[in-house]
Length: 119
Image (cartoon, rainbow, N blue to C red; front, side, top):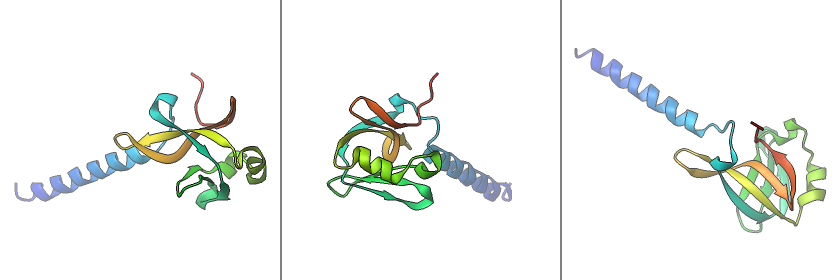
């Protein structure tokens, strides 16, 4: 019995760690799983792992995960949205905490980028 306790503790730790990590992975987001935020884009940069990073007038930033791998272009995005007000759908993770991950980016009534799947 004493040998089973450490094994059970390790297994419980592994299961909890797996659940926590899985809840931080953003996939198949839906509009109702997002927080909608409006920002003015003051700068657009390339982030790590081919991310595209949008900066606001303050210190906040938001990113399109692997946006450059998805066919988006920095120069084209700069022409479209730099110094303009855009609407972001930001994915929620781990118990409803809002991430900086952009699930959808719109300008006026046009969709610039979306991860939402038609159902």
